[in-house]
Length: 566
Image 1 (cartoon, helix red, strand yellow):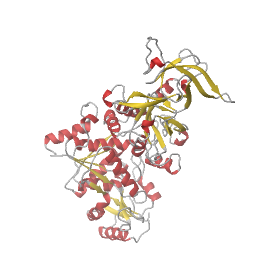
Image 2 (cartoon, rainbow, N blue to C red):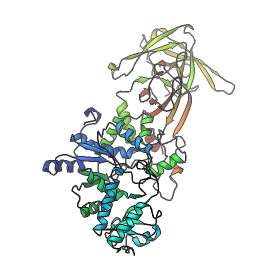
Image 3 (tube, rainbow, N blue to C red):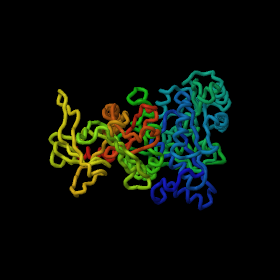
Image 4 (tube, rainbow, N blue to C red):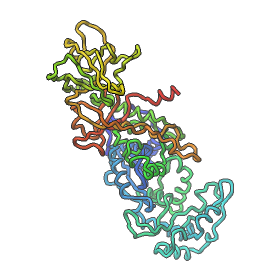
């Protein structure tokens, strides 16, 4: 069931602590194989943090030629949708992983989970409680003060069975009754102070409809779902470490034949973004972004739409590794992962984002010739392409200055530059409009310098890119950048994280020009605009005759330079 080619992942690193545990369990004979699972709640789109868990759980199955389940822990119908289920399946497959026949839902087990709850009641380990939410908080106690027992805690087994059955039949209103585990109200771990394991929710479920009006809580459902599926290693992030005693208590109390081992690892903390699904949903619903797949969002669908590759995300997860201690990963590490992936394989092309017309006055007006461009200077096996060249071209406006400084090695009055794959040209004049805006520059070319080299051996420092005015393709460009201007936008709970949104996270260029070879470039393909960055056609906004490019990433880390300059 291997889903990744070895070349997709960088050089091997020593086993992380989870893989070490897995290896020891296999070597000792504790397990003959491994069964892991990726268990998302279908209440939003997956983000880059989930990618770390996907690569860990599915990666272990790939490395051990074993199984990883995809299971949706769908126990809260008020927040879950089929749209989220389908998006998650698509994301996992796009990352390169396959669950085969092992697609499950916690809702598959609702009958079994109910029967387990009845068993807990019969064991005297669960009771129906009628405290309201506020009363329950008061009875729960604090980190320094023990909780108080509910006045309903010592109901008889018979009464609890009757009330729980009536909860199931829908006789009670939401919030009026819950089923709680009977553990220890004085436990130093608040999760063990008689946690709620079932509540009433009179909301249709995306799979079971109105069959149920009571739904199991996540902590209760998760461990039993793992056990039902014979999971060997239940891998989760560190915030569930305090929940592990409850995980173990449920399985030990019910004496389930399979008791998976829960192991926690540090979640991914990435600068210049937020990882909370609640906050991501807020950005979507309040229209600060253009949906879950907005290329500025670090959702997997947003990264895919922007032009990131599955290999780049897998390599990013491999690079940051798996640890036990919380730490922060700089956004530049993720950006370098896509640069490293695209640099050796993205074809080089020419695109002009801010076009300025260049007229070669001494070039024949009716002539067009084809220049040969390399698709990748370092990879000659990627071949060449033909580029139309005529009297009128477009260059970047930033490649011309009327009064350039000495170290400006591009065009200015009287200055000579090399046109990439073309000729050496010298600026002789320029045109302006009434406002003083430059509308065109005029040059002469040296016919003896085709291909960019001078027979007389003269040195020209500047080389600029261009597109032919007669054949260039009009397109729109989305220049995407980091969504937030500060490293930790949600660090202060008393400050609205949205105030740190980057107003330049999306800049739209309406009238860019690209070489004609890009006319039929498909979404999902990436190219490097020489001297500019990596770009990919937008799979949503692009259509035949309406080409829209997303900037995947710049050629270099511009944010590092910004921080250095203060």
